[in-house]
Image 1: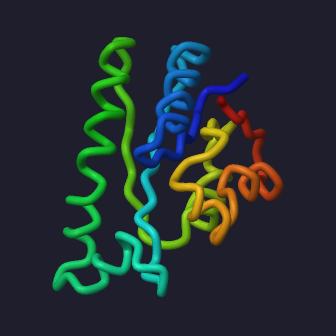
Image 2 (image 1 turned 180 degrees about the vertical axis):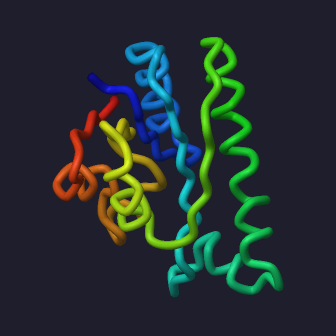
Length: 139
């Protein structure tokens, strides 16, 4: 039985679909939504601008606020309360580090831009291959 679900999200449509799947198909489960603010890189991502902030954790919270507020609003439509978490670091590693504390991971099939997927690789694919718990990939 799946009683604890981890749903990693970004601001993509696929991430929203993953959360919808978890809410619709596991209404009695404890759902934790995880937003990972990536590590700084030479690619000029949001994480690079965060690295210039005086208070990195506060800047990460501010960056994640809109995404997590959207997740809470969606959960409220299903009359479900969710737990939210923010992690700093590489998305795949952050998700896998959390996964062992859950019964399953529900993740969108892809997120981010095409360039991100080509350069960084597909996070969902890496999580699917390496997760210590079952992974449900929502499309």
